[in-house]
Length: 494
Image 1: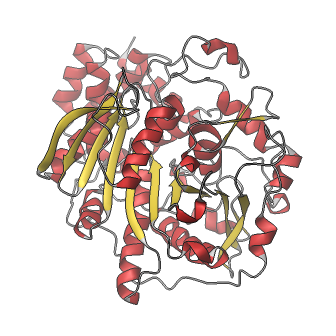
Image 2 (image 1 turned 90 degrees about the vertical axis):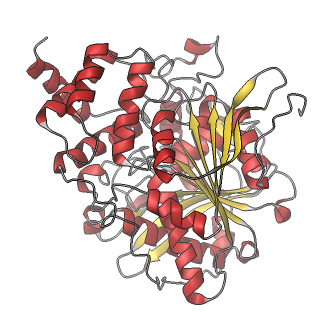
């Protein structure tokens, strides 16, 4: 096949509309290509960390809103009454523009008053933490193939924490703005600022959590969202000379931390996992410097990787594809690969009118159906995104914020190799040598290494969305993160 045709297929692939949660992986790939097309050399000094200046957050009255947000029961719940309290609704982050962010909150299953508060953020940019995080990965309920009923997730993260899921920025999921120009004027900085304003107001609505230990978690483009929000919190706590938000730590899975190391790490991952040819890998090594500047020869070489690796799930290179959109019988032989059609079930469920009423979704403000990755907020109209988040990570470490990175090892979108290359740039001294960790007596759960100020762990057999593919291992890792200790090395611990 001629190179020009392969290149054309590459760009058609990136431009093709995707269904449900396939959007998040392809969106990140497209976003990366868009940034590459800017062809600007790296300048880590100028693109250092954002100017995290003092943010005067809008604070509105929260009187009576908590009671309004209480969920009596979700349609199709396995029990009429959940074993924990759950809430959903909106927090206004800009009263003048009418910008409001949607949240879903589930208290801990046991003893919530003594459990920390954890915020979860999916990436994209422009993808939903409700549909991805809560309903597909780590929330208390998953959706059955009929798209109408739910079943219990035994490894939900609210087993050990109070979990808060935020659809951000406005235009994602049920979140909205009355000022439609907001959708074309968003980016990393506004997203971080709005998320901070959301938290300040949400804590007024749920004041008992003001003194609670607070953690931020996420995945993928959460590699931008999480450290940016964390640094806003650190900065504003410093300006106010008080702890407005008791931030203790951050944990990011399969994170996009640095555009160039992600591109290089992805290509090397393709090669070491037999997804591309030796000649293509050699061409990429010859033509691509991965320093912010991408020549035509480099782009042409990169385009070959799409054709050579074929139609696979980039999230999990060993998972089957969803064939008919509703066939859960495809994967009876393997729990770890997950049902490839489950994103379709979630989308069907979250578009049911009775579900939207139960969640208090303001459908009168939305002129579009709920989808996982927004059609109106995406990489094409994203205004700002640093080339590297590593200076921001360094700042968190310097301020004593517990920092964990983890990687499912069968993801090719933000692969383990990319994270390791980012760790090389950070250059942190090792304090705890590489070793296996366990969540089952007979199976290695992954591998972990402790750096000064940062922990890096892999999750064996997990794709991009770690809790989806390895729920038990993900819960073990998350519990260890909250406790501030490395995951178990004793095979008999469980």
